[in-house]
Image 1: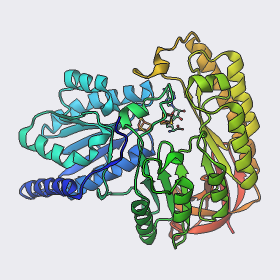
Image 2: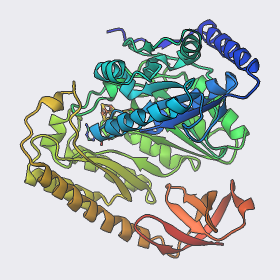
Image 3: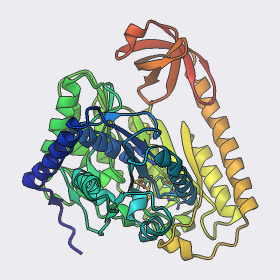
Length: 467
Ligand code: SAH
Ligand code: SF4
Ligand code: F3S
């Protein structure tokens, strides 16, 4: 397969902007500002893509709405990671027949990871006639053209041809926050973990050029952003497709040396490629947040092999030990799957013992969900659902106790936190490691770093006072 990274030409993007102009002109004649609503499911990668969709929509003259009711354009940016996520989308998509009945001109689109699944495309074609268009992540950059064509012909359009993937630089973005920003550094995934649908729907790994990423970060920092999260399914393979001599640790170091008062963090790191160089780089630069999301998925080496993760329990534990050695204050989080096909009670105990050994600050816990087309969906799975639920509950209980214990250790510490919002009569802030702190203070502090002394803790959050 051709794995060379293709960059969408400036000319092709200009063509899309000319569709934006035509759509804006169309609405200028309508005598009212059209409204658009984007609903995002799934991970930060989708959040980042939605910011681009909003950027295009703004350029087409749309104002953003907070609900589908009355919106002229509705976009569902979807997630395919588990069956439950898809069911929710289908349910909510079905409900749009009502909003469309009340506003027949409404144009409805489905995009994101589900749009990359042929079975979903078929289902939309057959059973969701109120959906006007479907486009996979590879075609996001062509959204203005799709919208224009739908507005002109009122035909249903599917931009879903499978492609190895490309990179489009220069799509406008309407960001959710002026304080925190997602920056995608690469797209797609080459890992093919046996349970995972992402490589099928997002294509092969492709990295943005370091200079494009640095320019984006620089301009974000200049505009007042204080917290940047670099995004990729496996950030540690950054640059492998570019041959530019810059790996992920090098990129991180370059960003950390940009002028300004900010923090940079990243997700997700694949344990196979997480190197001592990466951990040393994190430790060396004060602007790199001492936070690491390092999904382990299972504590059993046999299960890890069946998952095609390319590391075993021991290697994982050694990497974590090194990271903790060079960053004693490291905040560690992870993902874990319970009930992978063939996981025995003993293998599940290995998962429990791994979390007890590592002591994560928090965990994202999932029950295995078979995804059609992935190898794990065809593996024999004899563990009853009740047993999987029981394992899941046990895992959550063990982790909650650990999170509570770790949070209690914060009490009495004074930490530099980014004040990021307001919740009722309290302000909210985040520690460098991403933990939530509530404290009393004046709203003018939002957007600044403050020293907070932690006075209370629960499983989920901390309370503090201004120093
Ligand atoms: N690229 C990231 C993960 C992205 S998906 C990584 O490799 O770490 C986020 C998480 O969803 C995964 O880490 C995994 O724990 C979970 N997940 C993915 N596919 C799943 C499936 N079929 N069933 C249950 N959980 C799944
Ligand atoms: Fe999925 Fe594995 Fe790629 Fe993560 S690394 S996106 S779990 S295939
Ligand atoms: Fe979901 Fe796609 Fe992210 S499947 S988890 S939205 S990459």
